[in-house]
Structure formats: structure tokens, C-alpha cells
Length: 128
Image 1 (cartoon, rainbow, N blue to C red):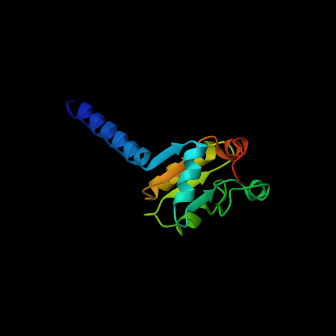
Image 2: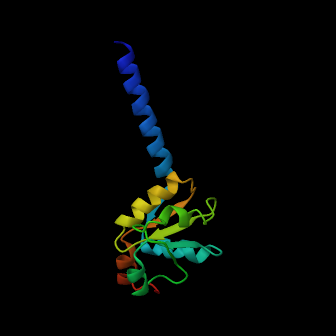
Image 3: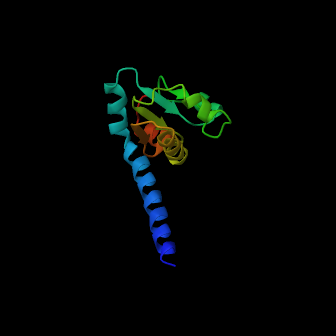
């Protein structure tokens, strides 16, 4: 009987520690900070996780399109440098956050998620 509370505590600790490692590598930042980051980076890994159709309707310059909902997402992102910052965005910020969490699980160290996504980017008159 004493084993059950201890096992519960170990499982809880494991879950919490895994979540904190993932969230430490992801920073959700506003448009101006995101723009500043990609401008100050030499050859930034800019990742648009929207569908190809959304991407062709408009995207941030030099963004690589890897569809979060596509069947090859994990395979394609493995081609990126895990030790270099990755700048991720989608339409409104929901898919990019999920994609960022997956990137963290895959071992990416520094991930910047665009708060509000491409909609916010365009509404703040940033260069497409």
C-alpha cells in the first residue's frame, strides 16, 4: 500500500519535468520581437506550418513551408538544424504552438512561436 503513493509521485514528477523541458525551449513572442529576431539572425530557420494553399496566398519572406497537418511533418523538420533557432508561425498561432511542442520533443533547443500567427503579422503591416 505504501508503494502506490510513491509510484503516483514518481509519475507526476516525470510528467512535470518533461513539460518544463519542452516549454523552456519554446518562446511565444509578439510580431515586433519575432521580426527583430529573424532580421538579426543569419539565415534564420523560418518555418511556416500552414497548408501549401495558405502559404501560396502569402507568407513571410524566405519561410520554408512544412504543413503541420501533412503526413511528412516529422520527417521534413528533421532536415533542420536542432541547435539553431527555429522561428515558427501559422495562420493564428494554434498550429504553430503544437508544431513548436513537437519540435521541442524532437530535440530542437530554441523555438520562437509567432503570437497571433500570420494574421497578426499582416495586421501589423509587416513585410510579407
